[in-house]
Image (cartoon, rainbow, N blue to C red; front, side, top):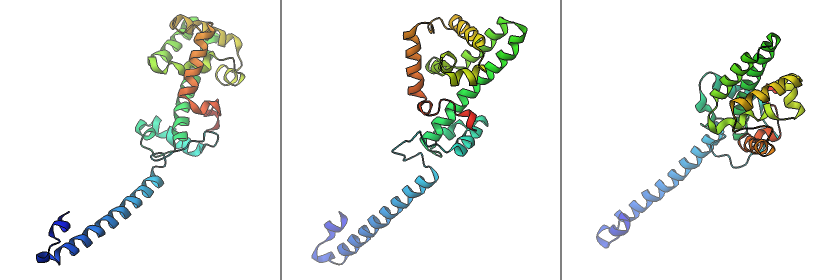
Length: 205
């Protein structure tokens, strides 16, 4: 704009010089922008990711991200350091491991035939979740064999006991009600997209 205003006979040499400088700035700016984008894509692959493929997941990266999360670096999930699939898988791993620890503790306390211990462990588990993340309890309520094996160690009595206690703790989630169960299942797969392809991810780490 300045070059255009100065493009007068009196300043015939100033306008072309400013136009040249402006054109160089545009070229250099565009080059810098392109290189910055490539650099971000290389170092932050999840930042500009457009497509997702949950069937193919780098479990080494999932393990690295899980380690960072356990060390307290939860921002690593949203910084874009890892692909979206890896971030979603890592969140699923943390949830699975939390459920499994709780069920393992109940399994051990069951030898004492103490329902109080079972309820205490499940109450602690529920207290870790907020209202918007109750869907993470779905694997404990599902009849899928893979969940029964991984979380309940194929112990049907343990599963029945857990489901009864959960119904006592959370009356609004009556798992004997098919509508409530379907709602929980829908929310689980909406918020845990990897589970459609990898029902249990933590066993691969």
